Length: 245
Length: 263
Image (cartoon, rainbow over all chains, first blue to last red; front, side):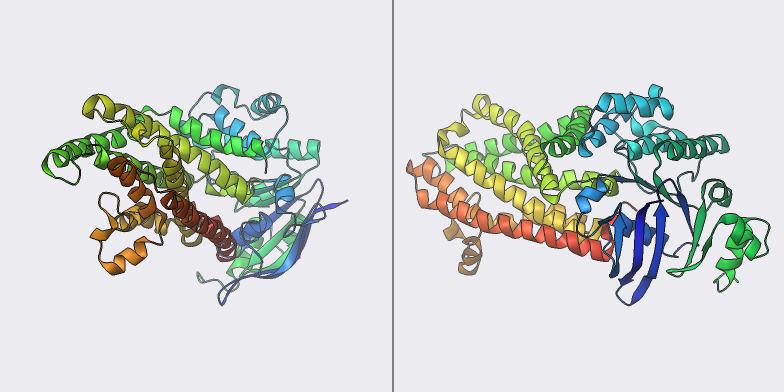
């Protein structure tokens, strides 16, 4: 399988603080990789570097075999991102937001693309609604539609189901599984929901203090650490030198 | 440069303005109030001083020109701040937009925002005060263009600060024009300033623009040198602002401001 994301020994320092300490990993085509770790472990910094929002202190990132540093615009055309910490303009309607972002990503056949995503994500009835007036679950689906408007080869998801009720959360997970299968895209999923990670991810990276402290298939990690589920593995690894001990 | 992307970002702000009546009202309200106030002050001075008695519209014309500059600069900053306030900043910077495309789109949108406010204000001056800014003739275009470039320049400089330092730089966005206004010699000749302030004023394009507006209206002559110097300083500061914006963008990528902006 072809690697769509290749991260080679990237470091990020903020002054003397080392936020990410030389990590390397790959994400294959048609793979969902889980990025786990406690708050402050370097997940957001890593995602920021993959999006070109942060410049690594050293190391290299390749997306679809293109070096990020030298091909930022070309890479951003094939990548997208959602996070509960960023939102779409609240005063615009859902359709206006999707139209604006379709233009920014130079999407051809905008009408058809919006119709396709509306149907798949069940937001057809929301298209005329003001984005800021939607519920969390509705906003989440609209953000996902924005993130897919350019048919990305690589999707970066930061807590995609945070604060969603179980039904909407399940809908999003099922959608992501189906969409990945259909489009053969690579997904990097940062999440604190271990059930979600176990269900969606082929393999996971466990980060702590800017380093990858373990990695592998969820079932292999569970067996390796002698636990019954991924949450217990997460707790074991994150508590090893945790301030809450 | 992609016109599609420039248009896309313009649309984002166009939708925002046209969807909200209070926003349109806000754009029109302040310039109209400002011009009306300065219209009455202008009338008073025209009848009670000798300096202005041959050109009743001088103060009002300068007030309109200054307001255009102010609206352009603040308008540009507002467009940038809107992205931060709506937590859309990260979405914008992960879209495949070149810095030049973002700036071009904001420059066009800022002009339209300024004109929405300015045109009604200019239309008010004729019936209310019997004054037309068109008395400046063809040079009005050059003066407006010069002010527009300087307004955009200030907007880009402040946006560079927002990029580099984050939302904490917001207060500076509102105060830039007030800092420069005394040196701009908007309502008085440059000789009014102390000598040290005159030296500062001469390295800003503003003084040449407002001196020339007064020159045309009071002396009925044109000093093309003023227009030339205004454009020369504008070219210098505009280039500087673009360079600083690119520098700030790279500094923000090192510091992490881009990813933390919406939080």
